[in-house]
Amino acid sequence: MRMLLIHSDYLEYEVKGKALKKPEEIKEDQKIGKLDEVLAVFMSVEKVDEQNPDEVVDKAIKEIEDVASQVKTKNIFVYPFAHLSSELGSPEIALKILKKIEEKLKEKEYNVKRAPFGYYKAFKLSCKGHPLAELSRTIVPGE
Ligand SMILES: Nc1ncnc2c1ncn2[C@@H]1O[C@H](COS(=O)(=O)NC(=O)[C@@H](N)CO)[C@@H](O)[C@H]1O
Image 1 (tube, rainbow, N blue to C red):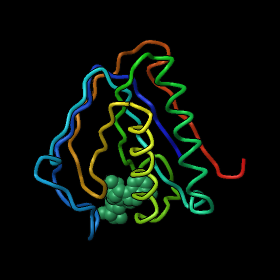
Image 2 (image 1 turned 90 degrees about the vertical axis):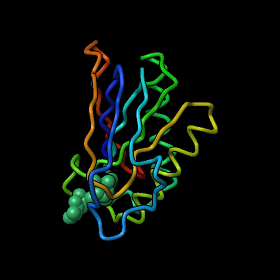
Image 3 (image 1 turned 45 degrees about the horizontal axis):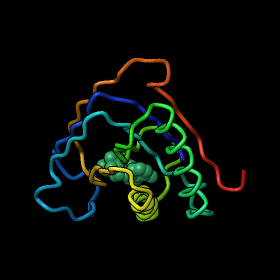
């Protein structure tokens, strides 16, 4: 898994269309979303992650918690992003992993939004620009 973590004044998105034949089903109120004072986490799930999705989820959570505590926010935006890797995992597994990450962060009392999976989305992001505001992490199961 490849993650790009951007500490932002806000992230807002608007669904514009289907990017997959079968994107995840969403309700009307999920077609737009916004969080302020947020750690935006753009994630590309990779083929290698399919070897051990649970381990990838746990490692991703650890990385996200680590950065969130450093930048002092409890607001997390889980954002599916297919452009951080040329070895993308299947949409089915990717969605499962992203949903699990959202679920586990909520269990840990984070305020979490997840952007809809399988759609083209317009988004606006306001990076804060401090030294820890732009970070990336790579997670490989078994390493
Ligand atoms: N492995 C993945 N990791 C993260 N998001 C993914 C992944 N696969 C699909 N998606 C989701 O599905 C959307 C489209 O995925 S995609 O791989 O870019 N596919 C397409 O764009 C197709 N229109 C042509 O391939 C992405 O924007 C993202 O929301």
